[in-house]
Image 1: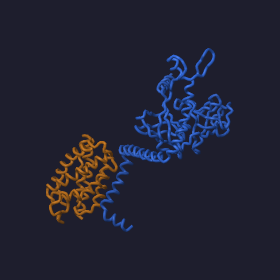
Image 2: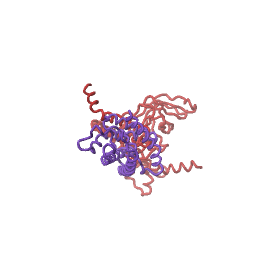
Image 3: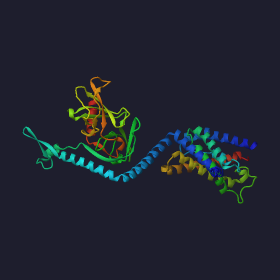
Image 4: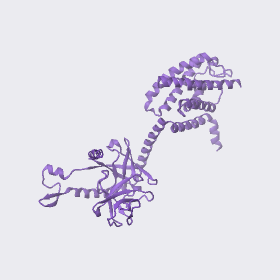
Length: 293
Length: 171
């Protein structure tokens, strides 16, 4: 302690210079708009780099678990791919399911059979928060990778959130665990009865499903998946299972509300996919035309 | 006691001139027409003054200038920096054998015109470079910082010579 005091006394000029510069730096960043925005931007980039490096390290340590997870995910994708190859072909009054690649049909018919609507862009989560009421996730892809705001973010197990802010290298995703997030979902067991999934805070693995019409006899354990009606998430992405018995919606007595346990644990989200709707601009332009009528 | 009042008057006069006159000129003419005269207050503080006092007074004067410019912390940071480096700048241009106790302040009346001009030029260029770097807050604009430093240095050094001729500070 005495040595430290002697050091400060001996270097009084330097210590006072450093202390006053630190104070000035704080005042500059706090009270000057221009310097504040530069500082915020630079700090964001540095934080992004640090988070990415930290994530790289933890990725390396958990490589075995990641390989297992990717293998399982690959199997799911292969299954989906195989199923996607099977298309229904009408012949007189009957539909036959045939293999798309081996089916004999002219090019114009083939084009009609398969029309890809979504593109999946792989990304990694480098910062995540689930403890607040407005949670955000940072991913390591940005506009340079073809991302733009309002795209859905999913994993093989479920939904993650919606892309909101896109920088060159990084993007911020508004988590499904954010009070402003609303996801259009459906219950395939009931002819795709659809409603809105919202998070009301509290348990980060449970969300509330609302606006399901009252005549559906929904039971706990029923599957919930994305409806595909919002153009953000493709139809059929798993979301979770109904957790509780449906009850009458407090705000609207003609509808039901129930709790849904998410299939994707948001706290362990690592590898994610950003879903880009290839027809988004066409759909938006059509919707705008209707809005002006 | 008389000497202290001289420094206080110089402090008030230079800060007022900077805040009322030179700030208005910069606003009217443009970003490259900066006359920064107030660091002369730090240069003319007593030669025997300890560095912590120089740093503190430089920072205080900077905050007063910031009040007029509406840029909290920018001039204060440059003032603290100038106070910190003043002993080295003065030492670089000191006469052979160093200063004697007779030289109270670093003014032409005490240290000769060439020594004063060299010291003032050196201190001003470092002060201005620090100030414009902090103002830009990133070295991405290094060329702009350098251009602003050069243009402000030419103008400020000219006004400094004028100040020294007009007031010829002795204490």
